[in-house]
Structure formats: C-alpha cells, structure tokens
Image (cartoon, rainbow, N blue to C red; front, side, top):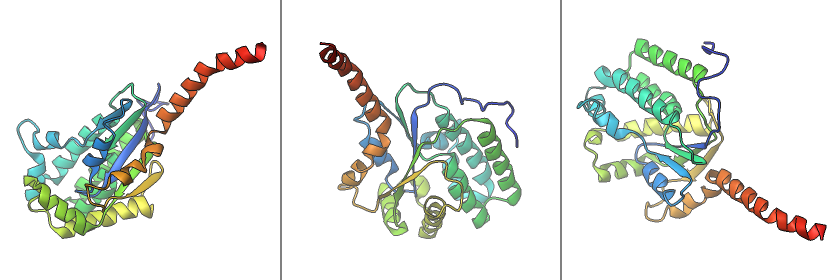
Length: 246
C-alpha cells in the first residue's frame, strides 16, 4: 500500500531517540521505566492500561479477557489507537522511552488471538490492513528495542502477586504462548524488527534487577551523553584556541 503523500506524516522535524520496552506480561516493564525517572531529559510513556480499563466507562481489558471471541477485535482496535497516540506524542526531550509498541501488539498479541481462535480470520485481516496503512503513511520512530526476557513461570507468579483483577483468569499456557511469540520476533527475527534489540535478563528478583537495568543505560541515554559531550567541547574549545593563538 503506497503512502498517501510522498512523505510520511510526522517524518519531518527533530525526533527523540525512541526506545520500546518489550516483554511478556509481568516482565517488569513499568519497573524498568521507573528506573529512568531520575533522568530529566527522558520522556517516559507507560502502557495506556487505564484507558483500556475505562473507555467511556467500559472496561475493555476485562471484557477481552472474559469474552475474547467477542471483544478481541474492538479491544485490539482501541489498543492500536492508544499506542499510535503514544508513538506520535511530541516531546522536546532527547529520549522517549515507551512501554510496548504497535509492533508487539501486531507480532505477539494479535497473532496469539488468531492462534487461539478468539480473533476471526476476517477480523485479523482488517487489523493487518490497519497496521499496513499506519506503517506506510505514518512515521513510527524506532531506534532501540529493550527486550526484558523472562520465563513464563516467573511472570506467572508475578502476575498472581500483583493481583490485577482483569488478569485473574489468565492461565500459564497463555503466558507460554506469548513468550514464544516474543522470542520468535525479538530473538529469532521471524517478524520485522524495526530497531536493534538489547536483551536483558528480567528473571532476576525485582529487588536486585537494578544492576541489569543499569547495564542498559549507556545504550538508552546515548543521545544525551553525546549532546553533553558536544556541549562540553563547545564550552572548552575557545580556551584551547586562545592558547594556540597565544
């Protein structure tokens, strides 16, 4: 499908270094984002779960889990809209850190819905046409993917501990299926990866995983570090020139 114009919508102007934080349910994505709150030049965008739980007073997330065959399509359509809102969110900060993306919605969750039979092939095809239209006509900035790699058993225990009411009926088998879909996409490359992938061990205890999060700082904060280095060089260069002239 060709773009509506010669240039994708939103492709002009300065873009922040955009990072997608991907992983299974309960892999610690929100905790990972919290780790970067201390950096002033980072824009943090958490997954819009509250919008999914309250779409004009209707909890679409709960309906999707309880009656997936009926609500998978409208839920995933709303996910697409809310994620696109995050992708096109404008910020003056150097780094934009996003919890999940349109790509994981398409490559993991929609594929899972199709495989389980909760999404009719016709509904699936409509969603694919939407994704194709969006990626052909709207600029989706993607510079790095951080994959919080976990085992299904670990995230299943975390999910039970956080006790989100909508997730009470989620079985371990579903988490295993999502795990395989994430692995196929981000490790084996069976679907398009829009950016390089940094894999972190997110099976570590959430109280000690900070050291693993810290390992990602250089990759994520690279544009800030470069900007600060360049700024420092500009400040010091006049004195160096002065010495040379003298």
